[in-house]
Amino acid sequence: MVTVSIESPRQAGVIRLLEASDDYAASLYPAASNHPLDLETLEKPNVTFFIARRDDEIVGCCALVDSGDMTGEIKRMFVDPSARGFKISKQMMDKLVLRGLEMRLRVIRLETGIYQPEAIKLYRGYGFQEIEPFGAYKADPLSLFMEKELSSTTVEQ
Image (cartoon, rainbow, N blue to C red; front, side, top):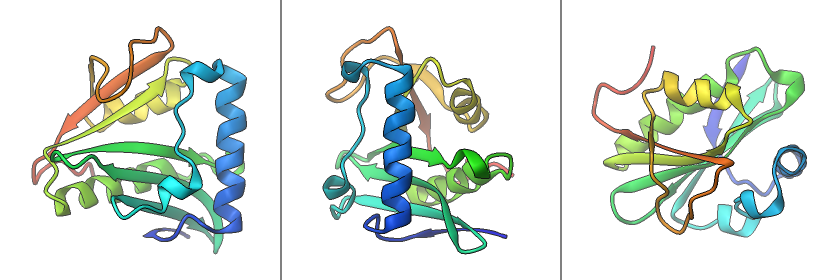
């Protein structure tokens, strides 16, 4: 059974996932194209951090960062490779979108890499569309920027 809940990121299982995520991103992209948030930033009040557990083992995580302008950004979406195929990303996205609605966000945005087709497919399946770089991001041929406008009917079934 998989559960997704809001929890503190400062847990050994999460730190292990964040390190695996960093290693995975470093294997695909140069450092200048990676934009992870560190543990301290993930603990800030404007961040909602989700943890997915499968039989009590931490197997996935993601964060929704409130940008303060009625927009949010998805950061640190990662599922342990050993737990892929159980629709954990979808369950985290469902919770993340619901949280965005609760926060009355207008839009949720994200940056992902072009060499991550599974992530791109997930985001497109949730109605995210490509946009220009936003916030502090600069144009990068290895990055894809996306956003989804929120309404009360945006949760996928």
